[in-house]
Amino acid sequence: MVFVITGPSGVGKGTLIRALLQQVPELELSVSATTRHARPGETQGVHYHFLADEEFQRRFDAGEFVESAGYSGRRYGTLRSELEDRVQAGRSVVLEIELQGARQVRETVPDAVQIFIAPPTPDTLRLRLVGRGTDSSDDIERRLGVAESELAARDEFAYVVVNDRLEEAVARLVEIVRGEMTGRPVPSTE
Image 1: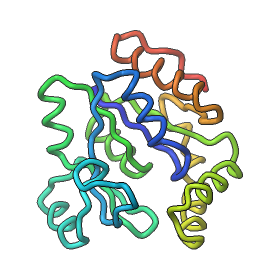
Image 2: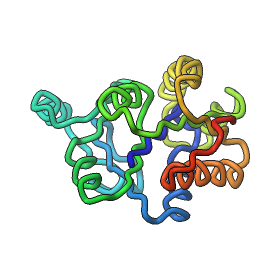
Image 3: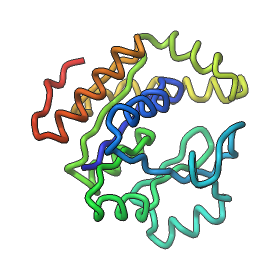
């Protein structure tokens, strides 16, 4: 199975996915490609495939992406090989991608389970972006502007998980994934 997890920047997707992978070890995380620079502690091929703009464009032109999107002046995408190799081997895969990419995957992989992660409030999102200390104030404002339109898209998703209390959000995410993997989907309420 393919699980798509999306939501605004700073909502806690990465934290939730790390906890999900610990609790559902049969899942594998697809490593996305990006044109942004590595943040402190990020490793090439582990956190992202960090590509120069020209290399990203070459691979895009060659049809090597299942999805790709621009976000805050950078490009992101899922390499087809990252997804196909795992699925063909019978493994379930988690994609942590932006809204544009989630919409593309909805078209190219219609049976993918789509999960939207939402903040409890927009103010919470601002505090999280500032608190992580990885973005400039201009980047934070740009991300918050994008987040406004992303939050309006939450109704497009089969599932919405509000990341207010981490333990509760993780439990809900695990419940959704395990339910889908066992053929017993859970109700789609928040």
